[in-house]
Amino acid sequence: MPDQYVMRDPTTQYPKSGPEFSQQQPGPGLQQQMGPQPDAGEHSYRGTGRLTGRKAVVTGADSGIGRAVAIAFAREGADVVLSYLPEEEPDAQQVVQLIEDAGQRAVTMPGDVTDEAYCTELIETARREFGGVDVLANIAGKQQEVPDIADLTTEQFDETFKTDVYSLFWLCRAAVPQMPAGSAIINTTSVEAYEPAPILLDYAAAKSAINTFTKSLARQVAPKGIRVNAVAPGPVWTPLQVVGGQPASALKQFGAQTPLGRPAQPAEMAPAFVFLASQEASYVIGETLSATGGMPTP
Ligand code: NAD
Ligand code: MG
Image (cartoon, rainbow, N blue to C red; front, side, top):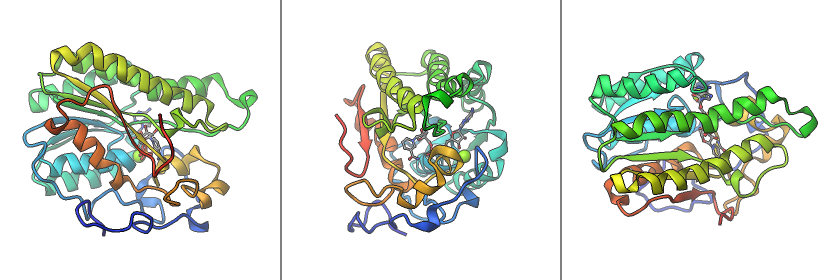
């Protein structure tokens, strides 16, 4: 399993997509039912104590990018509150085990981030269990392809914005007053904010909003010593893509459009989140760190 310290050719570090990538599951999907299995760093991520003693909240922590981040945070020395949907319990339990194997605490808090009261309670859980929160990684997201605006329902538009944007507002609003100086918030935008696919109108617009929300909040809370940044992934092999994020027929080509010619694995996203959470990024504020396999970003 490639880790983040051994030099190798990134074009061949992980497989290109092919016909075996064409698969669908009902939402929100389980990572453990995907084949090929995504690599969230379970067997490879090596920590170096960069988040020792930190108290983290991670949304979407059961699978994909959130799972990779939860594993990496724990191996860097953080305790983690895990947010995910109740149907995702089997994936979440695997992450709990990995966090405990790393010698850290994992607190599960399944629920729906489109519910304002749940978002508030999630931050309260960290305060109650860990005595506070100093890292908030907002990774939960919803992506459903709809090729024609005429078929895009108000219900979907609303759900996308509630999941991807409102939850950020609710979680950040609850967390900021609790956060000591030195804390970090990391949001998850996408290359879709810059190169929006015609089939992802609501999602691309929401990801664009996340970028601007990140920059505004970053300027607002920097004087308090709280840093707010975002990560913009390119195509990553996760459940999101196989529960309607892309048409099944497009998945055999997933990631082929990048200069690396392959999709990312969630493990390749985690180091960006770790960097932005850690004190190493003390002067990095309002930034979107792109990990797009070379797809251009501004
Ligand atoms: P994923 O399906 O593994 O993660 C998304 C998670 O969001 C789910 O596991 C679920 O726990 C959570 N979620 C969704 N709706 C929720 C709700 N209503 N309440 C609580 N939790 C909810 O897929 P992923 O690709 O790892 O997605 C993580 C983030 O990365 C998302 O914000 C996504 O938009 C972003 N992203 C993904 C890609 C990609 O290609 N996979 C690219 C760019 C950005
Ligand atoms: Mg999931």
